[in-house]
Image (cartoon, rainbow, N blue to C red):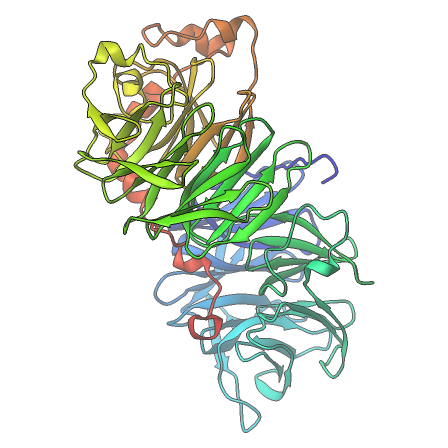
Length: 621
């Protein structure tokens, strides 16, 4: 934390939905998405997998909990019956399994007093389970006149044997003795999303943005903490998007309370009061918009979550500014002087904001479909080109705030645009694999011969089509597979991001098919955009469904850097001496039909996988 470093367990090959920490050792169990969804138990020190549990869950593993002695692990799957499985995780053996519930199960909790008992909660569901042989017997909660069956979002055992506490979507805590409901206590306005047992008492978190400390029977609320901007300590690493964000997760660490919010923030609360924002990121939907500042180590991102964010990329790695937007957005760009920031929105409108204050300067709404790319022209930034899924690129005069031209002629939606270094010529890519050229300001179309294209000096190169980047496309690939490209200022290195989650580096120009590349993996979903920082020292990438902004440091390898491997050369030498090797052979071996099918298990259209949202539709709205 002090060094701003992270250590990653890289064993998973798809989204991780669930996590449980071993009660004694530095072990963690994590469950993932997949047709045969796997659970990995791994060591946090060595980051090595200790046990791989497979063959019991379909679609994904949505809940996990270690038994109190740490020998067993309970898991819940995303199949139609939400199977509950009890494992001897060291042996990798299933001890017992049963059908859980027809609807979603959010939490499974092992009984700390009896190893063979556990409880599950979910949509209109609470069940108390007893392991018997290779299966389970279950009992539903008995409500009597004390309460009625509600959707339960959280559950915890107390220090007193046979007592169970569940947090309902109504904001009530239900207190159970074995299977009998003793009483309910009003704890929050809206769902009680999180509950954690303390040595004495409990801590809860709700949709109301309040963290509450309770005694051991929920008879007294000892203290409340409202998650507010005013309460943030000076050492916080950013800004809260809003006061009182819905609280989704609570854990304990080093004598503090750790809180995760719906807005993608993790905070550390000192029990005496002050709270520190540790980390934050985008929320629901996908992140496509990414822009690097022309002069400073700063970038901007815009997302389907209807937020625009400015990030500092130096040692602090923190969010400098954030604002809510009326609609989600998928593109943004700084002006040449870095003072203005243009943002394209999903409803066909765009706005230009002050890059420091993120306040509106001007906005337009000339299109019905999504704005897919946006770019200022070079030097004074006199023109702003705005590309849309309406198949047009509009050209605006920034000084007069008027639309001065329309680029017509594309036969499909526009994917990428780039200005030449004079700010006169615009290169346009479309979803029909077209590479078109238009002249500012009117948008007059030009037909340019291939030999001439290479002579043009471009201000930026973010397009993915054309003879100079033909080699970036994998075999048998659709026009939508490569989402983004970015060329270094010196024109030698082209970075790309694709649907398979790969960041690739190519030696530019990338002529001919299937060129050599260096491949990097970090994102868990498709890479939607890539940009080099102004001095080419850092590559920025954003992921779609993983909503992550990643910062990659470029290593300058001296002599090797100046002698990039030519795309025609054999890649064996380069592989050995650490130069730009090629994964072409491996790429050819990938069964893309299967790969595409595997990737598309997750919903990619602006929503996170349904199973990831621990959410109640009606109450949460």
